[in-house]
Image (tube, rainbow, N blue to C red; front, side, top):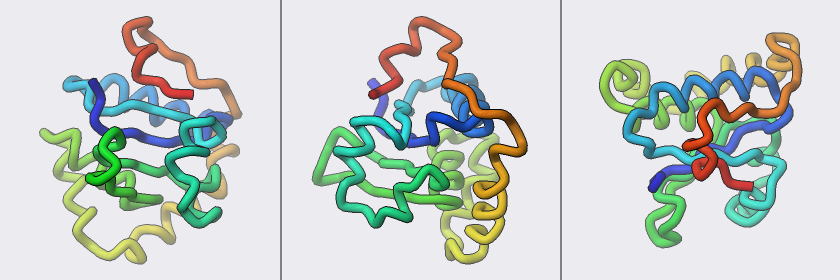
Length: 137
């Protein structure tokens, strides 16, 4: 059962590619996924500022099934924390989570604004039927 939830832009080819990579490297299956445009995002992110839950933001919800233990991370900090939680080699990227967000969010925002130019919009393709339960509406 996944412990953490990654929200992504469900209409973005670049974001889909990131999800595909996460599916491959998440050997422990600790992540679930949901589009920012879906019902799960509407429910779990309703108290966040609109700019933090926009399609330009990756959002990570740690311990998403336990309301008292939930932790929310956005933009670059969501990326770095996701890497940290993956462990292994990915921790060498994820340690940046412990630095201030302003150091990296400027670059994150540039990529987010241009992501549709990097890869055309697509619907997220689930490569393995066994991963279906990891995708929430």
